[in-house]
Length: 423
Image 1 (cartoon, rainbow, N blue to C red):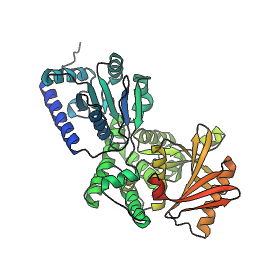
Image 2: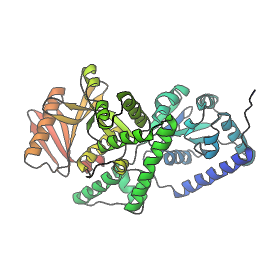
Image 3: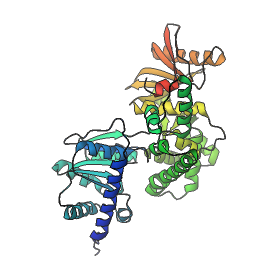
Image 4: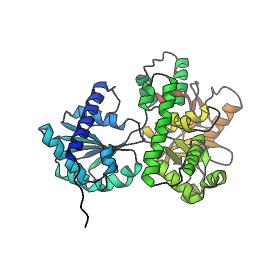
């Protein structure tokens, strides 16, 4: 017969103190964020997204706004990494109560999915109402399967994306007074992305170093370790392919042809990368679901800075990075996104309300002056609008702002920076 060894309370007390000190430093240094979530009585709050997108930052901000006595703890602490047992959570609360003199009213738990059997504990906590609860996680599985099942109807889940362009400017302390300055700031945003620590970094050398470390952390902690991958080399090949081909069509057969990775393994690896919020596969819009499932998908990366840190492309691919940034912004705004194409044209984004198309956007890193590029982009968008029965669509450009009427359809031409700013 085997017995569980109780967690060492002295070590746990030291760990709690360390995370309390971290929490206090975070409060003192906190830079204001937009869209800080509010707690809802009777519901847990789940904040999910790619590692380093600012989930903890928003969780701490929500806790401060609540005014409740808060216990913060990160379950990637080595103490729990070695012993990820659910009874350790109760021991954690017992040790905290013993030394703090008062029970917390709110628990902020980072990466709770690392604890075996956490779901039952979370459900009991919410049902009894003993504590308010905020949980964060860098796994989509926590949102789509575990969290929703564990606390069905009792959790308000929110995906945390990297900083949008306007918030990035605020973090970086950049003020733009002219379209030319906005274009320059957009170039920097596309190069370095919108992860908060990158926006606050002192120089480009530091930004590059931090981004490379982020990529390693995402792959090692959220993919390789979590899924027990035995051949990291193949995974890194797949990630290099995905990041290099951001905003491009792909299929698992193409990955097989490039690296000799069988289709099933490619599907598994891409599933893991999507679960870690690193990449997203976007289907073609088609009313026939069989055709939609058969056609190639388009790949996007959660952050252009992460993409550029790992990509094997020799060029900066700024046009595709602009398209990638627009995709992330659309997702941040809650849109369901597909792409559209026919035999002669392709349009980057079709927005849907359920199965019904409600909008279309084309992205080009061009001024779209008179010429072949303008004719191609306008013709493609109008063909899409006609096929989908829409009256208006948008082309996002480098710096042009105008309106056209083409074959009874309205075409709005706007600068990319204006769209990303929410104007």
